[in-house]
Image (cartoon, rainbow, N blue to C red; front, side, top):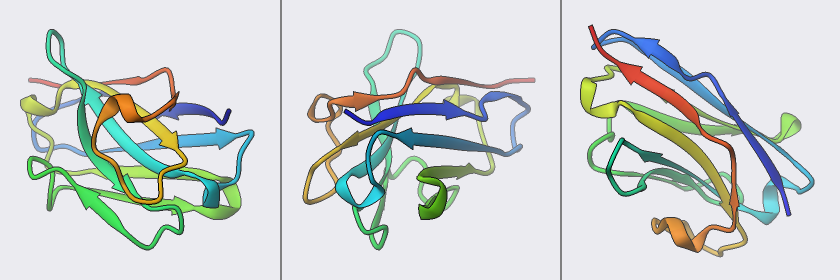
Amino acid sequence: QVHLVESGGGWVQPGGSLRLSCAASGGFWFEYTMAWFRQALGKERGFVAGLSKNGGVTVYADSVKGRFTVDRENAKNTVYQQMNNLGTQDTAVYYCAADKHPIIVKVADRYANWGQGTQVTVSL
């Protein structure tokens, strides 16, 4: 299985920005559909954004569309998520996920490979 490690989380004031990274090892980027999920305290883990195997297609949850952007640096086997105009509703643990799906899937339990998560806190 591919091993995933997230980084880049932290605290930011409303309106601020963060850039998350998901470094993969033990697999090749073209074998996996990649996705970002988040889980706020007491809430279900939900889909944030996804990237197709070839990196040519991106899908975003409506709640982050226009604020978040995902891309991949193939040479480093790393997926990024740029998060702008953050609000308190974005506070959550953010997870990187990967699986060998032919298309981007938005359901968390369809992904077998997960990182440990990185905390994002948006507050005054």
